[in-house]
Image (cartoon, rainbow, N blue to C red):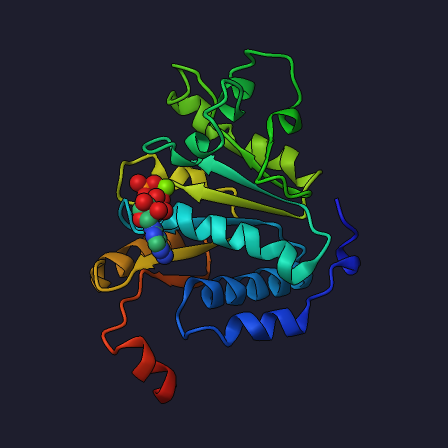
Length: 233
Ligand SMILES: Nc1ncnc2c1ncn2[C@@H]1O[C@H](COP(=O)(O)OP(=O)(O)OP(=O)(O)O)[C@@H](O)[C@H]1O
Ligand SMILES: [Mg+2]
């Protein structure tokens, strides 16, 4: 783990990213990295969940964008993105769906260190993905309740722990995965998700004492042609 004070925000890189087309994922993820880091310094927090109301809004895509933006903006940082979506283990597939993951570890199936099953993300030092692994029992409630143990362990090794959480309304257990988060980032697909659904989700998260840090408006459509947009903004 990096010494917290050693992480210095690259302000020109941040400025470059923020100057990208307004609302692009590059500028949205840079803004999120800035918020995560500010909150991390202020509150010594390191666990941040990414969650959407419904499936397909771009939670995995956005969480990966934030993971990749971390070293660009903070330099020598260590971060792990955890696949915490049992309804669609897409992130685990992206790293080859290894047999070993957090679910096996929780089921005490194997005697390996949880850190050993973190897969390096795209050969980038310091960045990793923790897959679910294969375990037919992993949907058992007791394992989900123990998911916080995985987070506790990762906290000792990584500066940032990002959780690719299950969509809030996918099933009753979804929200259990964000319980270990210090804050959550809401991912909203532009022009798709109804406002009232997002509001209900946020109210329910608040009742569970899970606070929101910010939101990512994903897949924003640009109805104005790009050449004209550039002249206007
Ligand atoms: N900003 C984007 N630009 C281009 N493609 C995107 C963007 N966001 C998401 N996608 C694509 O849309 C699809 C759904 O995105 P993603 O898998 O991230 O959704 P999700 O919210 O994680 O879904 P689920 O809850 O089912 O896991 C994927 O094919 C992804 O590559
Ligand atoms: Mg996903």
